[in-house]
Length: 113
Image: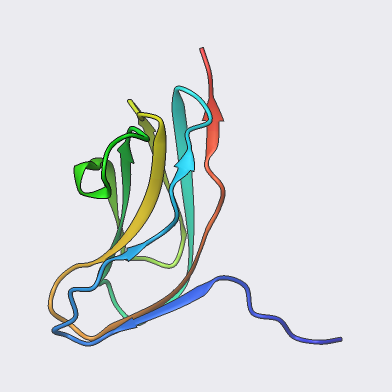
């Protein structure tokens, strides 16, 4: 049997302020529940943000629907409403400590009225 590695690993230096953007996706309903499986981490130092915008707007016009700290080895859920046409997730560094995190962002679950 072969070993495989699921998820992604991010590492950052203490002075790193790089945001990691996902591609824009069409919203799938009125309310979304996002889940992040934080598989392992050295220490807190990242957060997940969900951004939204209309398709005719530039990326710089995106607004943040919500954020959640990725600070423990667990599955973290975030439920949001009010999305415009497009949504994406962003991993942002927090604090000023060098750290790393291995995680998996699951597909959002959408509900409609």
